[in-house]
Image (cartoon, rainbow, N blue to C red; front, side, top):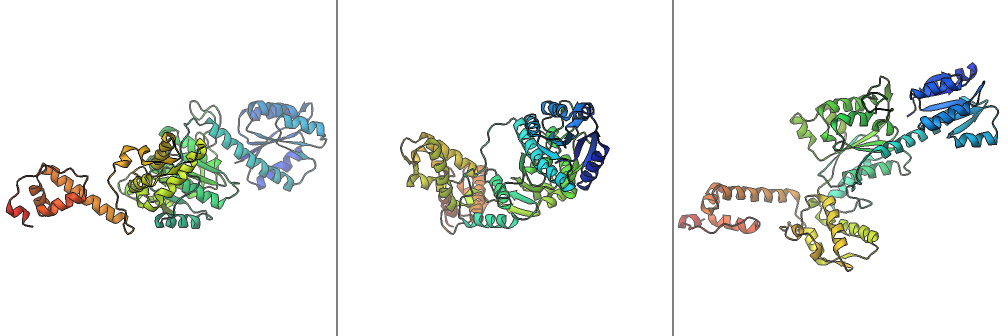
Length: 469
């Protein structure tokens, strides 16, 4: 955003005009009457926009522009003159001038130039900011190029996402790692801003060290701490007028949660090392793989911040609850790999069977990795089950009936674990295990057949009483 402007002109009338015009827009002004004074202001790195007169007595506005181009390239320079010529304009553009204003000009003309400069400044600072980040290329969650699937679980989530997209409401997207939370956040933003005219800024809270998190979010002033050699714009400022995605927000400390709460409540903050209050208009989307409500009960997350974030909750179901979508997602991922490799690739029916029965604890991200590996290993157009990892092929079958649901699967898992603990406690003695569980031995044997992944110990002698049930 632009909150301070430098006016370089030796005419008092022009300086007064700009001061009044900028004040109407809530922008602070500072002044210089010649090139030397202007350079001194620019050295302090406090302005984002400079209006510079070409004629400054014995000095030239071109000198100011030349200094700015070399030393403060992020500042937007607009030249003002009553004696402009095409050659002068070309020379100024070569030195980095953003625009020209011909005297005399109206407040409306100045306001239009400020708005154009604001958009350029935000875009330029965002590009610089991202270039400064050192990070390995990351695979985006569910990076299929769109959200694939037609199961009731995902359709309900997407319907809610479409309803909230046009609003300014804060959205909290929950779900296990790898379910596609960032992808849904991007879809919400895309529906709200299809032409991508507004900024969309993302930050992974888990990837930023705690001591740098405040600077990343709010920016810092030059000299705020060791290594702060220049002012840096934070994510909230970069996202002004658009959307900020805070990925894995459950990872931030309680101290940072308090500072984040203030921004959400008041839409304002100060840069690290600064005293000026900066106001922003940002739509916040947060994601987490944690149960934040439980985290608040355990004292790990502020309750007031949770309610600020949980204005419009969206839950992304894990892939094991979207069994009907697995093959559609897998085929979409395989097509992407086929396009990359320049080959035609098709999943065999056998491969589909194993993909459908696996529970996918790593969700879409795990499926994407498996598909990429299969595509690389496969020689022919048919991608067969032979190229699947062993853990996928050897996995216990998931209940595949159409009327299956997560609640039933959870009960089955609870039963399996309870039997396993009983057998472990009795060192494999089914008679004693059955007594602990309240089963007959015959019932226990039937249960063991249902839970084929439980290792059955060698049978022990059983009394007539133990098998009578």
